Image 1 (tube, protein in one colour):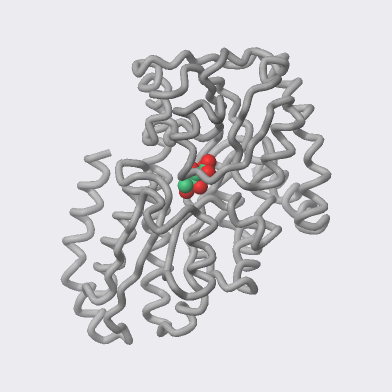
Image 2 (cartoon, rainbow, N blue to C red; image 1 turned 120 degrees about the vertical axis):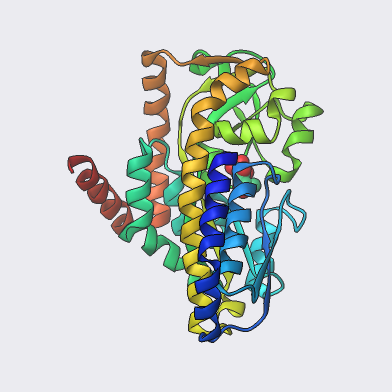
Length: 338
Ligand code: TF8
């Protein structure tokens, strides 16, 4: 990771000179950009936010300054989204799942087992389907610039090892504030409790909830291993993050300024995905070393859970619209055949 960062910084500084020359010829004004996010600075999200900030500085010849503010210091995802819509904050990165109340099509990404590997994720999210869903934000006062990877989600809890579906019974499980997640885990028998991420660690610590689900990276960076003994590898859904801008503010930017932000969002996306995958590949061993007991589901139990979860597909298809749902299935078929 440090190596990755150093490579990026090195690349950034060699290019800084030509970038500032070309920035002179561009229509770029001094801008201060508050870029909020929910995880801490030492997370994959925090590292990529730093790359984004460096890249914006580089491309704008230092005129556009990103102040990256993590750990939900500007509020949980929902609150930041409203601040962006109102124009009180410029940018953020957060879960697509927390945007569903604003743009219902975002629920597509909550579909359990929709995406089965990172190749599918990248092609689907960066392709026409991802663009279409992201473009829907515009009517609601937001502009989506790029999808970053949160990752495949896994279950943790402090009660017992989950080896079969029945083990979920009665587990108080925090879920994101999102209907698909709520229904999914109710369907599996858990006592699902929607809650903002920023409240999660203390809720786990005080046993207000017994468990939660998030990718390996977050379980590590948010130190959930301190308050969660058991982890079950379920990979039940691939969660994206999305970098968003206040449309109110965006509409006042020049084309050159907009391009700086779009380009930097993509550069940071590429860094972030690589960094996240790198960290995730070592996370299981790391979490074991921290004392977590990790189990995988037997193929038979995994299939049982999967079959139950596919029951929420009808709910999602109705929410996002049958056309988008069918287009997505067709696109995935194409990706899988390629
Ligand atoms: C969750 C999400 C969060 C992200 C992050 C705050 O469980 O996975 O980790 O939304 O941006 O709430």
